[in-house]
Length: 299
Length: 299
Image (cartoon, rainbow over all chains, first blue to last red; front, side, top):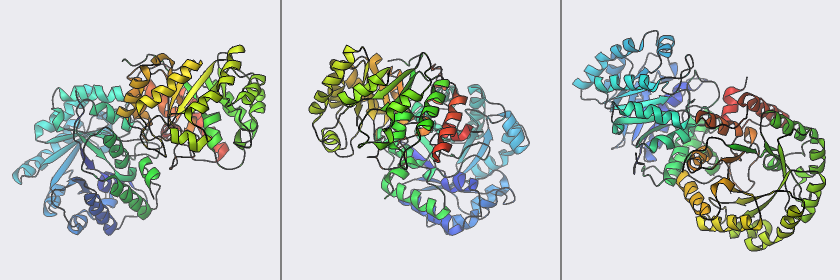
């Protein structure tokens, strides 16, 4: 129960951000330009692509080209989402540093979103886990709807803990806890985290909060107080969950970094460069900058 | 050092909100319509006008008409800003329930903004304090730039404490601590509050945080933890400090209320009606709704 001295920011914009952008497919060069700029800001974990069927998410259809196009920077982890073995094999061929799988904490969400139970969804990851282990690729596990579900509302913390434990037991080295519809508030975030840490140590957990209801920073402050030291965020607040109403998606990396700096928590990320990157990508996509810090500090 | 069970929301939109709106002077009927709707939401403290020379703030030139035009609801405190005795007399004639004076925590801000030292500015309030006492009108004291100043940067917590104590000693029943440029972060807010509570009990303090850097809810959470039980906010995030860059001003009342509800803190305010009020005033002013909750829940 102490604030961490250092936090790793896991940058979600190239994947969780761009995959939810409406409009035409974004040019590969913009994606690689974004990823290279993010690495130049000092971010050491960049979720760069999703190896999923382009029939499902056309915006991610150029995942292999993106991975091939980026100038890699040493010390940076370029990760990708791989929902199945085919995706994993493509990600492996594209030389990703880490892959990720995702389960839901809500049974209704799992059923309506991927047409199977939570248990079935986790079972489908077994071949990915096995292949990843064989090739010595670390796997990150996402749990969605940890603070609420668009179909069933509140989610019991124990239910989140169960799914997190299952993913950890399957071999995920890190579990990212996602309030993917951004409905949670601080006590709720704390209670959820307390339930999860009974099964998975806090060192292996990440907070992935969306800002749909403006609560993300308050919720992050509450879980930082419990020792969470990995935070997922997206520059300029890019992206969001298509199932949540409202305009906001992932919490903006700039806003998180500003708070962490004020709390004297080290990240190694340069705020000025990050603000410039948020301004640049917002201009490229012709969308408003979703970061308040970005708005306030843009020159 | 415990979260309060109940919080009073002090609604700033008709004054701190509208006075900072650019564009043409807003019709009196829109102002009275806003105030009546806010009272109907369950808000019991509405800062309704500023009795200041219209030469200085044309947007507040109809303060007397606003006060005369609203249908008063019993149990609601309709307050107004009164920077000098003339303003106080006009406010008294308009039958306000509470008046307010404001000092800065930053010497540079005081000099550049009102051309006198902090000590001189407080001295100028003495006739107001005296007249208010004579007429049995409670006086609220605002302290601005409590977490940072656009001219001198960081502000020592002890400096805030000194000005807060002076205002309390002069007879202000409540002191509202304003991060008027929205630059603070949670530890800083806590440290400032700790310094102030050495001189003024927390029961007499309010938190008045702007959301320019997106930090307001996290900062509020941090001071709620220290027992603050009065929060200033503005529906739809109306207004802002003209000295701060960026688009955001006062933290949105909807976003604060959503968090408080999640923390099981009572306010007596109806979120659904408040969201509708934020949508209504945003439409009237033809400006974007600055509340994320308002954006997410608008129907």
